[in-house]
Length: 130
Image (cartoon, rainbow, N blue to C red; front, side, top):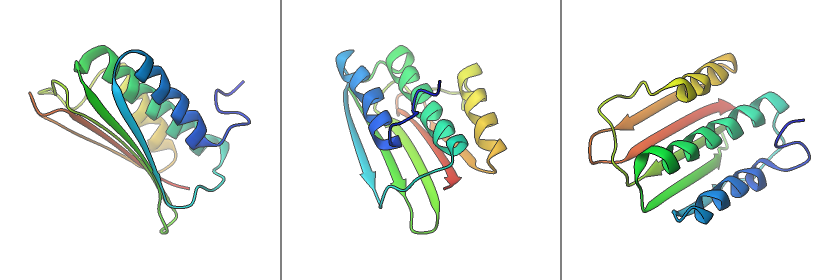
């Protein structure tokens, strides 16, 4: 069964944020635009992207604060952004988890962007048509 089956995407992503809060990370979820139904593939890709981003925040970033933005754009796109104030990295390619995010999003003709630098946190951006 899908981890988001029967739940709107914002609710499922809020549950991921709550897991991180329970781990001691101050994390905010900001949903903008009017949430709308997404195809199961699109919703799952965004959920898995958020899940991977939050896993990385908890395991690698050594952060105090993080933010998840879920933007339902008027242009038909849905954008997920996770940013943190953690360690950052010299590499933007990441490991297998981020590779999986890229593959899922590519199958939807979406885009993944990563911005990071040592000491400057990490930003994961995913954009798909919704």
